[in-house]
Every structure is written in structure tokens, then in C-alpha cells.
Image (tube, rainbow, N blue to C red):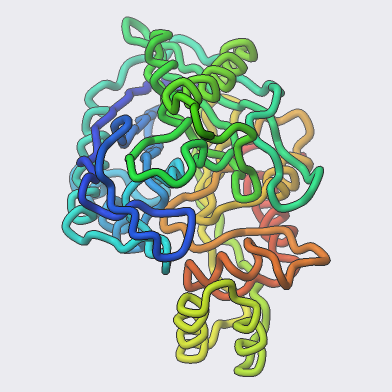
Length: 409
């Protein structure tokens, strides 16, 4: 017999980024935030079943440095006793938030601001743990909707236009909604105002519907929103329209589940990288889109030649019959497709921008040598170029690794 499942929710507001540089959109734009359109938050769901426990964070940030994510993990271990295996750290990847991940040319980090971020994560986790209450039932969602986004890398390329998620019904407490949809939060375009973009609207609308809501961005690496801010648009209304479409799909797709299991896992995967000697680095550098960014990347690769592979930790949690897997990349649609194809009928959510976001995880195409996700983006992140079979390799490794959570396909 399964142990009783408990769930709690925490939310804390991040410091205002006014006066700090925002991250995303282009090279050396110096977008110093001058106002806040809406607040940025860290949200956390705490889950406990017997000896098994998990924390799931989602922050309205573009990403985290390795140091920041390690500080967060140390603090929740020291204060709350949650090990790395039990903690999933995600960012919504808003491009109208402060520079909290080291992206060359896309915003200068403010160390004073960043030093205050881990405490917000811990406070949200403490609130979630204090809010733990018995779960009386789970409702899951896996529903196709009219797309909010499109594949920006390939004409008519794949887009997983599906809202996935879970409503956790608690005894004498508001339900918790965990909602996932894959799309870049760039509705607002190049703005000097900070905003959580459409993920914030999803959460706000969920709250208005009586649910404590957390948004978990999916495989959004190659997905942009269909509607973006244009002259004459009301930004708040545009965000609400996008958020409403996602929330409505979630509510319409809910159906009850008898499964109340809680499991978590860490999967050690090996990501293949493109072999590059000095001549290879120079050849790739000629494809760079910005001379300054390219030269910084080139010098880094020559000073620290990349290995043939990189070890990537994928963290997973099973809640009821649903499985959530997180990767530290801007992950392309194909990764989620590969994992789900291995388990037909299973509701599996593949999430990107976890932990320290390292780079893109793209699909190679015939035009890859001029491709932003394959060549230009790794230069921003200071990361090696991936091997052409990287997506297929890591997707199959994840599919194999989650067998302990879902059973044989």
C-alpha cells in the first residue's frame, strides 16, 4: 500500500531588477531595467510520501549560473534536508528578467542582485514545506491546444502544442496546479521593463481560479510565440491572452487518476560533443555572428579544449502516473518526442532550463553551419559544439533511465 501523499506550495517575490541589466535578445544591448511590468517570483512545490520527498522549483529567470544552483542546493540540504536527488530547479527562461546566467553579450550580471537570489529559493521552499497537507486526489492533463508557439528553427518543424500537468487536490487547502507548455517567454520582445512574460500570466490566472500555480517550461529551445508585442498592443492583454489559452487547455484536459505514487531519480547521461582541434575551433569561429562573442568563445575553447563528451545529470520525479524530467539546456522539441515515443500512452513531461543552463540542445539540419542553436548559441553560453547525434543520444538515454520510474515500455 502506498504511503499517504502530502503536498505544499510556496511563493516568494524576487527582488526588483530595476537598475540591473536584463538578459536576452541580442548582443550588448545594455538593457538596464527601468521599471517592472509585473513581479518576478520563485515558486516551489513540496511533496512527501513516506520516506520519499521532492522539491520542484520554478523561477521567473532566464537561467542560473552553476554557482547559484549549487548555493540553492546546499541551502535546502542544510536547512530542510533535501538532497540533490530530491530537488528539481527550473527557470521559466523569461527574457525580461535579470542576468542570472552567464551569457556573453546578453546582459552583464549584477553580483549584488544575484547574491540575494538563493535566499528567495530557500524561503519559497520553507513556505512549501510548512504548507504540506494531505492529498485527496490527483487530476492529470495531456491536451493538445491551438498552438501558442511555432518552430522557429525549421519551417513546419515539430512543435509539441500540448499542455501537460497535474492538479493536486488537497484536504482543506487550495489545490496545486503544475502546468507545462513549451514556448520561449519572449512575447514582450526587447523591453526595458522586467516581466515574467506569459508564464507569469498562466500562474496569475491559475491563482484567480483558486489554484496555487507553478509553470514549468517544456522543450522550448526551438519554439517562439506566434503572437508577439507590436505597436499599439496592450502588453498586459497580450500576456493574458497567451496565458488564458494555456490555462483553459489545462482545465479542459483534466481527468482523475487513481495513482498516488511519489518517486524520484537521477539519471547520469553522457552528451556527445563535436571533436575539435585548433583548426576545428578556428573553422567554427568563422561562423560566429558577433566578433566579440566569437573571439571570447574561441579563446576559451583553445585554452580548455573540450572533451569528447560531457556528463549531464537529468533529474526526474514521478507524481502519480506522471513523470517530469529536467535537463540543463534550452531543449529542442525532439528530445521530448524521443522520450515519449519510448512509452506510448505515458504522460511524460520533459523540461528545459534546469539547474545551470549550459547551452542549447538542438537538432542538426542541412543548414546547421549557419544555425543559431547549433553554432551561435553555444558561443553565448561558452559551451562546446554538440555532436550531430546529441539529441538522439540523450533522448534515448533518458528513455532508458526512467524505466525505474515507469516500468518497461
